[in-house]
Image (cartoon, rainbow, N blue to C red; front, top):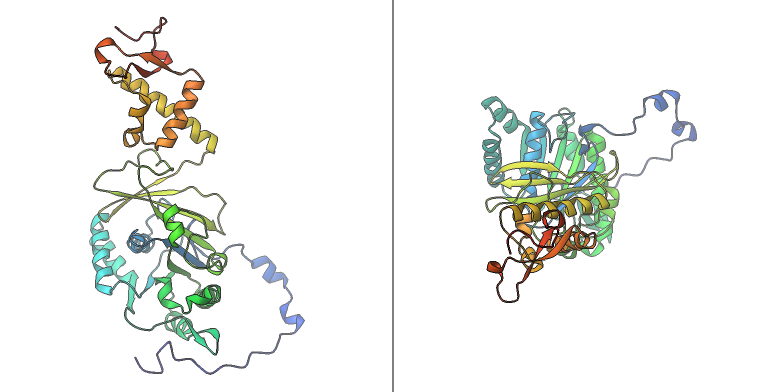
Length: 392
């Protein structure tokens, strides 16, 4: 790379333009009529021509998931069930995974998607990978105690202004900034760099970011889950948080999203999406190898979720009893995977069922009594009027 094209060579400071006159800043009738409330929509309720960050802990598979999304955008295939409004090509600037690794993942994803030869050709043409691993390619730099922009953002605009991508991806964010000791200054500089690209190309700039240690342990999914300060989440117009899910976690997968030993389940939250309605449902993603399936959380209130769990446990106990299987409270604690609820959720639902009289403690048939185990949890609609269940 020559000095003339090195994005880290800083140009001389340019004297700022003088402040424009008031008349140059007033709103015209034509401008008022043409103004849009949102930038160009690339994927509805997902991707717009503005700044986005996707936040996840290491090893979550966020880069592979994003590659899957970009292939869908290229081919106008729905992204997690969301309509692609503006298909196009994407620029991937990778400072972590080498080009060969990404190309291999793209191959496996295309195989799992069962793409036709024409679709494969289109996807391969639309995912442009710039490998900068091991290089000092930055969007910001420190000078005289201040953080400033390199020429990288402007050079990207200049290089692609005649054929702009719909998405420019930087992976990972930490590789393109400086000075984590001045977290918010660094993040604000990265926000400014992204906005230069957005303004020049009319595209979405996505930063792949890591969660903080505390957020990773507690599995938070709010807009401030990322490592560092608040400048990046505040400056972003789209924040996605990807968290792994385990059977003992508090959240329950929607119907049809069943874990198994060959698959992993992650939750994709959209805690901030400035150009869509608030409180967007969680997207549950089941990954088997390089195949992705998605399930959308039902938009229900906490009370409705609690009532659904109560009914779910009641149905479970009723069915199991019809199969001559009886449970104690302690045995239910070991059925989290079978029921699809956490221990805390099972106990909460059981308490409600017992208080309302829909589940009773009944005597076990004599041949099933062992040690201190004398009773079982019986749905009241299955209990006989004398308190017995079946032969005793």
